Image 1 (cartoon, helix red, strand yellow):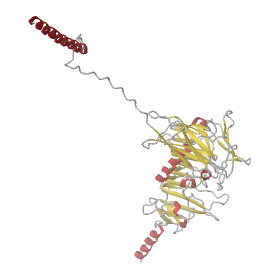
Image 2 (cartoon, helix red, strand yellow):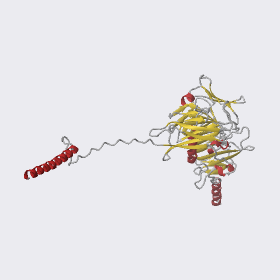
Image 3 (cartoon, helix red, strand yellow):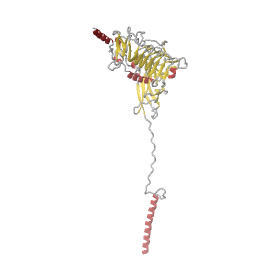
Length: 490
């Protein structure tokens, strides 16, 4: 009897600790109602934190997609307006997960938590709950948990970050949009005003610069003209990765003119013409702002004014100048055209999340510290470590994210990727400079041994005449002698 009871107890223990085998989804876009890959940020724009590594030590009000997660504090998108129906997180490897992580399903809200194959998922509490690496997940139901299997990965971080780097590099080529007012004269009232920027349908042109072998050429400088206007509408455009991208062009005729090229190549000063036609016009435009490392580090607020809710995307290119560390000191404030100011807060309404910060000219293993002032807008910092010690609202996309203080709030970037129009494209080829050939040395004639040597006084022609005259004289003299001899005989 004791043996039978022991056997039953063993079976029950095995059942209660059976690994969860549901899920096994390779890519998010393969699932109905799941996240989809699109636009510049791809899958990443659906997550509050998207990183290879993340450590959470302070309240994180948002979902995560992380390769290696250490969640000492709770995370999950808080239910506020009740508009978010599915809160998705992906944890490929877990060092630790707080038991009160994720947010309980309620009303229309459901969860989907996907774990990597290396995370041990077991049933606990009589099979009603699931533990991850021994830590019970109090806020998740069994049917909300999925797991990778057969070597498949719900998200391939290496592939996603490769695409994100390309997006960051492409964004970095855009200069500040004309009509943006940037006024930092008053340190206590530093602002961008984007209200005067045209956001009507506009087009994009992409110029590609190569040599005759198809090699992409960087640092070639161009000016852009509109036909009929002798003054450039954009000056000093420089190729990066062999390309120049210009947005916000109205319908019309334009041309590029090369100003300077790189050493070893000829400047092509011809007009490189193109047109923006109906097929090139998109349904809106992106507004680009330029900011320097020094400007964002100064402990004075930066205000972005004139933001249209549900309007154009605003992308801020921050030139980090290859610095190893960026210490953000400026509080970021956002003002909308309806007169409202946005403050950091928890929300499920992402419709006004149109601001993205792109950190360019990054050093290897660069660290961005947000410890001195509150920050608003999604962060694209591929390859970087982002240290968060203040309130941050937006997507945080980086190699490593550490939430150590304040609160971070999900606020998904709403990329406007509807009808972007077909870009006008043209390619220019630079020719190598011709290397001038060295003049040949004059040939020295070999003296003819039959001719008089240098220094002889005889002229060959004169010598021939003298010989001829001498011969004729001898003939005449001979004839004269013969005549005289006949006379003497007679």
